[in-house]
Image (cartoon, rainbow, N blue to C red; front, side, top):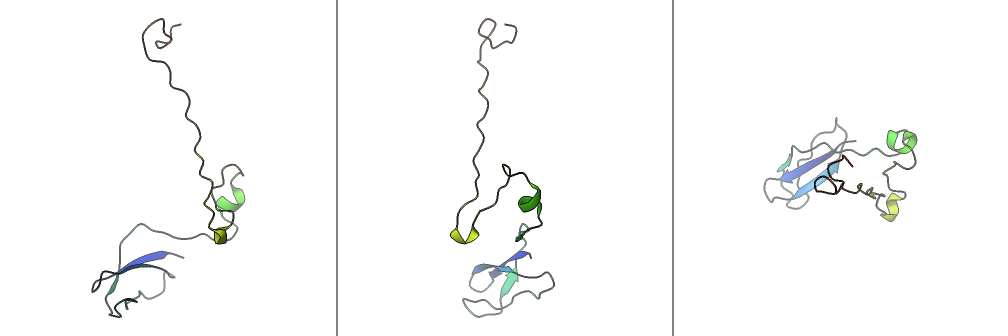
Length: 100
């Protein structure tokens, strides 16, 4: 289901709501109770829960980037790989030119 972002034009309150695409947009602000909520244009966001998705079922174990236990609030493993060592700078004789 898509996650929509709303902003109240009366008080400036912002909120997100998980809604079906067929649901009517929200109108009433939960803070000031005025019918001034407007749907914002933002990057699409959605949640893929359960099995059957590439991330959970088909991706290799070393490449998975999902939280093991969402309810415990544990972050996903995002360890970065080390970059290869840089080649030495310099001219001929130092190994930097590639001819030695």
